[in-house]
Amino acid sequence: MKKIVLIGYMASGKSAVGALLAKKSALKFIDLDSYIVSKIGLSIATVFKEKGEIFFRKIERKYLLEILDQQTSFILSVGGGTPCYGDNMEIINKFSLSVFLRTPVNTLTKRLQNEKQDRPLVASLNNEKLTEFVAKHLFERNPFYEKSKVIIETGEKDILEIVTEISKLSV
Image 1: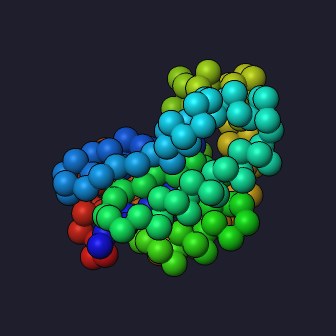
Image 2: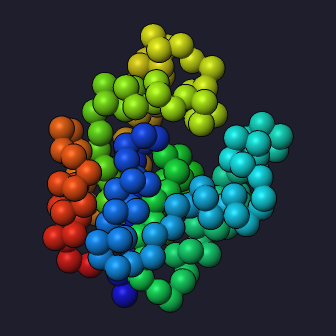
């Protein structure tokens, strides 16, 4: 059984890489945030705004465990904060092959500038503050991300190169 969990900061390409990887390897693709939205009927932004981050992290963990418990093969992309709460990273490593898509701050910032409205954590930041926020946040989260079994430097690679690199891993 193949269970691959893609980890990385927001806008690192987890969902795009995951969808293409799943298609190329004929596996099911699951995006944890989309899965949560389908289960609770509220957007992630709405949950953060109306119920708060602690509530979100509790349900995120519940659904992470539900997915990892499936007796099927899949590619799962998790939110940027998922590995950083509780023992989520240890659980991910126990039940899957974790792959960290390490992406440079300048690349993340460029991508986030174009999708701020969809990202509750950065929606209110101007572009100058965004770079500082991403750098600081990434510094805090990297110790969790770096516990991944595999680290892929995404740098200047296109999506197909990243997918090919992951495809070569034995699970």
